[in-house]
Image 1 (cartoon, one colour):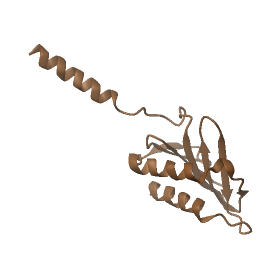
Image 2 (image 1 turned 120 degrees about the vertical axis):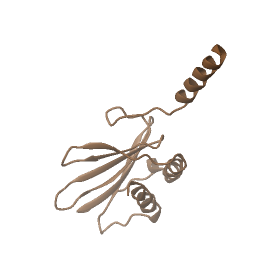
Image 3 (image 1 turned 30 degrees about the vertical axis):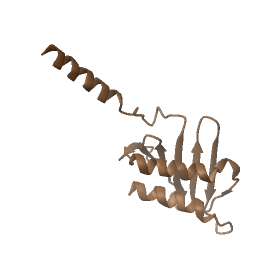
Length: 140
């Protein structure tokens, strides 16, 4: 009987220890995918932060409110980070905001790089827009 209880306790401990670390807006890991949109008449900036464990956060610049949204599946999160890595934003210099602008930012332990678009004078390559649209689909 004692052996059953001990094994049950060990099994429970093992299962709970496998859960990925949970973060807060104030305690974020080095690697994250940041995206959002801003500007317009109100000048509001909506920023979203996706972590490798699927956690998703939203911050509104007007209300200063930050909240955790529903997490994204592990497979979809991996797909999004792979797409980000493939784009190699560190090699891209694109900062052309318009009245309303959009951005994607790659943040990791080595560098932080950001692209911004929205100006009608400068078009963004479809591959960047595709990642942004795929990210936005995840928050709806």
